[in-house]
Amino acid sequence: MPRRARQAETEDDAPTPNKLPHPNTPPLDFSSPQSLFESFITPVTREEFFSSYWEKKPLLIQRSDPDIKSSYQSLFPMTDLKLACGKGIRYGRDVNLCKCKNGKKVLLPRRGKATYLEILKDFRSSRATIQFHQPQRFNDNLWQIMEKLECFFGALVGCNVYITPSGSQGLPPHHDDVEVFILQVEGEKHWRLYEPTIQLARGYDVTPADRVTTPTHDILLKEGDMLYFPRGTVHQADTPADSPHSTHVTISTYQNTSWVDYLQDLMPALLQDTAKDNVDLRRGIPLQQLLCLDPSRVGDTLSHLLSAIAKRIEGRCQLRSGEMLRDFMGNRLPPYLDVDSMNQEKKGTNGKSDGPPNLNSLTKLKYRDYAAITIDHVPETDSSEELMIYVFHALKNERKTHMVSDTEESPPVTGLRFPLSYMDALKKLWENNPICVKDLPLEDDRDKENLAISLWAEGLLETVSSKA
Image 1: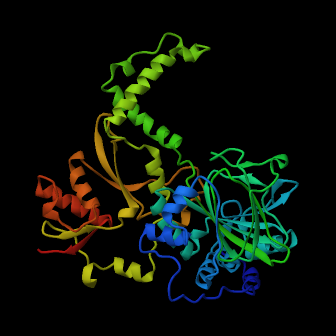
Image 2: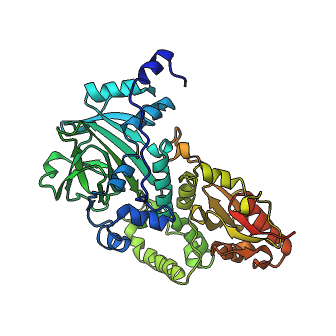
Image 3: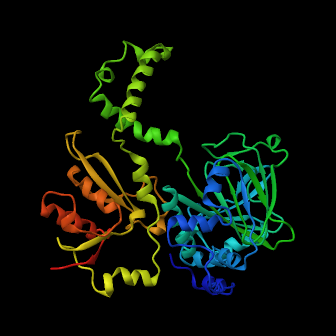
């Protein structure tokens, strides 16, 4: 929606962001998802992090490196808010204004389009915290970090920015259902962490005042510092009176990604597959079982049936993920592409147009970290017995809708469908080594070319060299 001319003139009087100098040695290594995460938590090693801290206890990383501080200052500082407002943002979906009052979160009743001047007014006069949702949609640096983290974790990664006035607190003590990384962008923030009331909690909850006593950690985060804590950790934070304001970014992941979620995802297909070979699973339940006041009377039978399912898993059966994989691939960020990368995408090897592969083409998989292979039924057929291979990918996902939607429906996942006979060939390509199309483990040359051209057309395969 266009802004009114008078508003635009006034808002343009606000400070514009300065271009930050690029350090000679970038503090974050984007060469691979693994290297990005390792540089993200340095000087702590990846092995130490997952053995000692992940899902266990908080970790504070304080850094005096000016390059890291400069890098953090590019992650949605307050001046970026003006740029985002200029692109059209709305209260609720994109931004909220909140205060902590008497141990409760109070949202300012704002609706509709949000303007920079209105937000700034509430920030200053009402001393409200600005909570900006999913800033990676507007900040390229965050986009680049988060899409690599989604590759590393194999799970969705969300983000919020909190800009809090001096001497203020935006949220009451609470716990979240996500693993949280706090990056201090501007100013200082005073954090207090407490023992979880529920270890590895599966939901957000405000903690009653009588449960918030002595903190386990009392921390002052400064620009360039990072704080990690597991889901379920009770926490609260305020901006010290001597800090003009505080801006911090929260990067979060592993929401609904526990074993219970995974089992709920696998069980429907696993039960159906096991029932084909196990007559006991196909037998009827006892008469009036659904009306029984004590369903535990069938406990022994259920235990026996679950043991049969466990034995099937131990026998290395095909486990078919249902909605979790589709949700991840359909909602995750697309690969980060700067201007040079986008220009290169339009060209093939050696700067020439990358035409479709043929039998003699030497090919290599592209964007392996952004694609996945699974097996599932064909939904539109009458026969529930037909299984196909699905290749899902995130190349066509929309950055502007990442983790934000005006509807409750998830976007459809993009991908291709192949016969089960293509599995060995796909696995060979997924080894990520160059391979000639004619060497793909398929019997028919037409199938080899069909597979290669289909993946190439989708942007998942590149031609290293080719002969007519």
